[in-house]
Image (cartoon, rainbow, N blue to C red; front, top):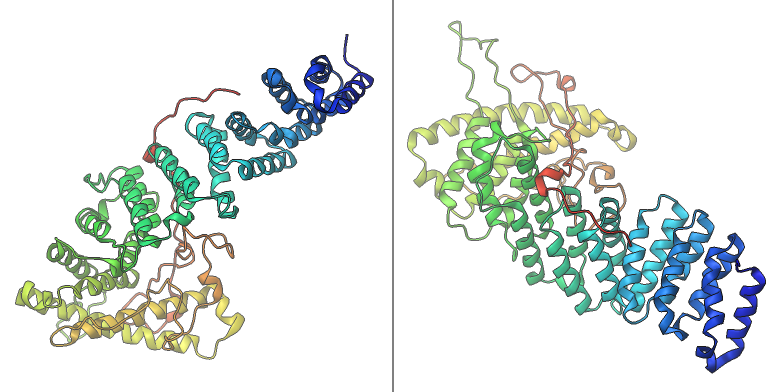
Length: 521
């Protein structure tokens, strides 16, 4: 016989009046449990009554939790939300892990209100037992269905940083770090980025030693001990992903030496052969440039500088041959790759500080003479473009600087100014490495008045105004490649073309294979 509303209220009254003698009224609690088999009204009442007396009947604990789970799977979303709202009341003692596991699986819902209720319940049990809750979450991340794994990782990446130190104790954070390392053994590119965000926000890792541990974590993922297979786009993308995650961690005390050495040994020699979802070379070159100020003592400093020097020469053309009548040949005008040269020259300048006699003692006289001819030709072209850009931007302020064309000109002026400063250093006798510039895609420093500031929109990180600690890099598609006018020192500065760069994408094959399917709760 089906349980009615009256039966439920009668049983509730019996238990409510029993006070300290609830255990003697097991039959009344069983009636409430049977309420999950009734109609919508009975189910809604059962969802509220079952958890209220749950702790008084330990022998019926499994039956009670299973009854509540039936309601969490009901076809009526309002009943599901009510049942989910009450789930934290079951999270006592050994049940915390099971409840956390259940709530994690319920993250797969597509109903917004229900999803918000699940996350609210997870936060509630976090405050009761953070480590136990994490046990349920990581269990599903490691063994659950793909959709559950994905949403559990996103939950950790967005919610952990909002919890207080009273909840996220050192013991809890150590547990998060240990479990995250297990997950990182088999992840997609997107998962890797999110999990790095999780551990980078841990207070216990906000020290030099902590940052070094994070770098070691990225090094393991980057496969820096292996030769780079330039024909495999997944491996190339993996290296780029890992480098971008490591970049915000580098400092004067946490060095980028291993990454720089790897780029010099495996990326620079194979630039033209790299197969990547992001084909533009300046992505790889920008990463190398941004890492170079944080390079520590380097065993292979001279060969790495030599490789940078070789690549720099490749991108700095010789002047075109003069025709017999003394005029320049119109058929062989070299293309000046300003974006690439800025990156390579900056990296060479940074590493050159560690071996300032490199150009004098390690480069033969003929090669040095050739290099200076290239520098001189490039510098002459720079002066023309800088003047043209300044004229094009003169008098423009506010909204006028926010057009795509003018924003690009501002960046182009920054690039050319940077190259000009660095070239002047190299023309010193002996070459100097003392000047300081800010890379053109980085936020402009107040002290740099030589070039107009970029509009503030250029300085936003990924996601607009949303601040993300793990990815403080500027938007990678915000800076466009500057292609100068064709022809020798063309006066038509406004007629250049540009192209957008793509961002990095997570790629499953590059990070992990197929995972085993999880079990339903």
